[in-house]
Length: 400
Image 1 (tube, rainbow, N blue to C red):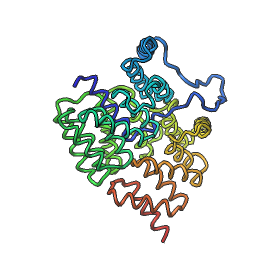
Image 2 (cartoon, rainbow, N blue to C red):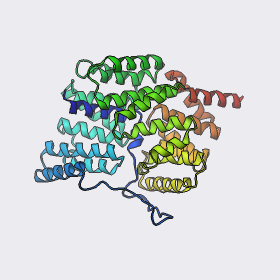
Image 3 (tube, one colour):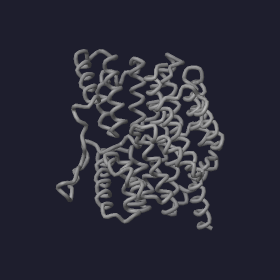
Image 4 (tube, one colour):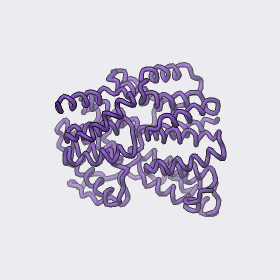
């Protein structure tokens, strides 16, 4: 496998596990936000002189010259998806879908198109449709690495761990060992074997001979998240190790910010995220830090988030549910406003962060049914998450 291919695989899995909402930024159709200060910078657009822009322009021209060429269309869609992940801007996902328009509804589309279509669908939380496309690819090519890896991540996000584990195990022999190891560690950390997942992943980082930069960032970030959930201070060394690799990783910034917020180190969150306001999930964490320190700029951040969420509601967009619930609970209308979003989010995806906001909103709203749902899943999965366990214990005592 080439370095370029393995980099793409690392991005595919790490971006899916635990970070789907981080791909969402302000949309082109968002409600207008009127700044209080004429000097306020609303958005910094990519320069036309950047390599990314030049690459996209070249690929667009090539695709336009041969609109029925699936290979050219796939190359353009791939570049748009990469831009979405680098910039945190979902408009690029729309451009990627448009590039694949001739094959978008075709179940017999070329394999590379099916994989890209599944990638776009999962980014928009259309998980079942994404899995259906990946199943088609697997029927054609049982050893298709990208399809196997992507399906494993989607199933993990849905909480379908047994099926996801099968795909992770299929990666042995067709991918560098670090990939199935991280794939399995992500599942083990959610199903009662957090310590084993942590140890196996650390061992793999120390002993694997093929760990590229993307895989290292992904692995260190996962180690940080596992440690965070276990209330282990080693989380910080993993997040910092991931940051030291270099590059701009939106999910890593969000995960590290969450750890800092839990540690009441809001000033460091502000320093880290003050230039990341285009991405809603990062602006949310920035606003939480600003509010925690009673900074006057918190009001502008909250106003911007409210406008973006209102615009997403007007479009019928449901991808923001987790962030919307967190916003309402801690910065907006309170528990009553947050709970419907937390419940709707939980019906779609079952990551640790989804469980936490469900428990937080349900506990604050004294919603016994939602708490019972969360407690049942928490006990059945055997997830080790100290903050959630404490919330469930406290809510149980208050109900007695």
